[in-house]
Image 1 (spheres, rainbow over the protein chains, first blue to last red):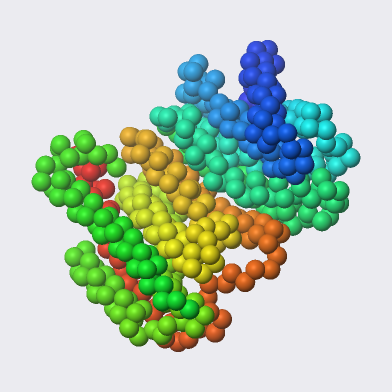
Image 2: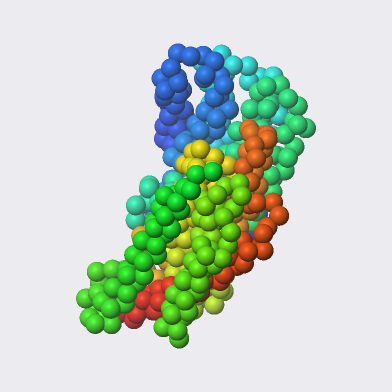
Length: 225
Length: 46
Length: 213
């Protein structure tokens, strides 16, 4: 069985399970709706303040949803005693990491699309015009968040106080991703072309490459025990 | 330019307290471990 | 050996204080507050040394599985967090008379604060795992990611600051470094490094004793 096939099987399994039960996706999407209210009430009726804070709020929403969604990446395996099964998979374990990562990226992308649409509609902001460059930033940010999130999720699944430990470990590592994506998003929403934020995109791409590499190299050590 | 010694003393003072405090903590743990190894290790995992 | 280190460190610290307050001149622009630098800069350098050892210890543990490497990593992290805390507090106190505020989100302070959070998380992870083998593995992974992330954080914060505050002269260093100030910095840096080595030696011994029982 090839490496790619093993990764695909994990990815496909997760998608299938989610498509049938929809429990996680529904809850997360509803969470996004609630975030909308949260931000509106927190920033008050001042429309300008809300619009000014929009890039930050958008990514805050992604990260909050990510903390919830990513932290549970391996919960199904753990609860159903499949952890051993994962451990005993022959060959390179990083295939499992890739498969899980792909699934998480799909999940996060769905959340992001929903958030962007909700923001556009409820906060009356034009997110359609910069949609294409925004998608680039979203994609890079998603990989950054999910690559580390998947690795740490595997780790914390086995640890006490995992719901607390996962955000505590993930958030400091995500600081560069957050800074870069919010800055880039802000520029894009002001109508600037993608070229203007090239340095942020390069930082994101570089960070993503680093996180992915470390994830691929160290996943087997996480899976060992 | 005012003397501002207060700030200097505050900074050095806090550092001194922190470093000294850590040194004492190390000494206390080492003592507990060498005196009664079994009990001490159970009360404080790494 | 440890004992000798301890005495050397104590001597070094005294020498550092002497040079910092006795020999080094009062700085022209900032006045006496600048002397906090003799505490602040060696602290952050020591912290970087510590976290470098966490990285090395983690990689070495994953490669060899010898518990000594993990003891190194865990001990270095603990001391590194201590020195990072001292860095942040001393930098903050220095900032008040210099910039008028205890905290500012400038590149260096922010990066240091993020560094602090990363390794506090590292220590938290270690405290939650009882099995030494699993603890060593997981800590190593987090340690590697944390260390590799440092330059990424540094650049991202630097660019972010440049974007939001184009020209503010926040440079803490005097531009041409007076050799006396340089000497004071050097002596204090050596002293802190000795102190770090002493702490590390003791902390690792404690870790070894704990694992024996």
